[in-house]
Amino acid sequence: MGLIIAAKFELEFSFETEEIIMTSEYLEEGQVVEGEYEIEILEINEDSYVFNFIDLNTGEEYIVDSTQIEASALPVIVYFIGSQVASSTYW
Image (cartoon, rainbow, N blue to C red; front, top):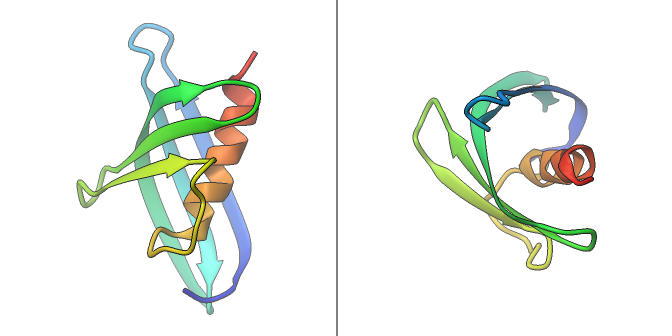
């Protein structure tokens, strides 16, 4: 994975279904990478969070656990976005 120099994302939350959909776009090594994910909140508290990101284009699932962050094939952008989702959804 190369250096990510710009990123943007948008979250949509349905109060009726409690579904969170995230669209992302980031620039990596001169290429625009786009993604669309459903986010399932598995656990969240003031110190940590666990989310399941489901890639709506490929069906792949990524568990993002803030207590288990380590080097992996999971895009760094997913961890960043996970932290942003946690800060915007934890009351």
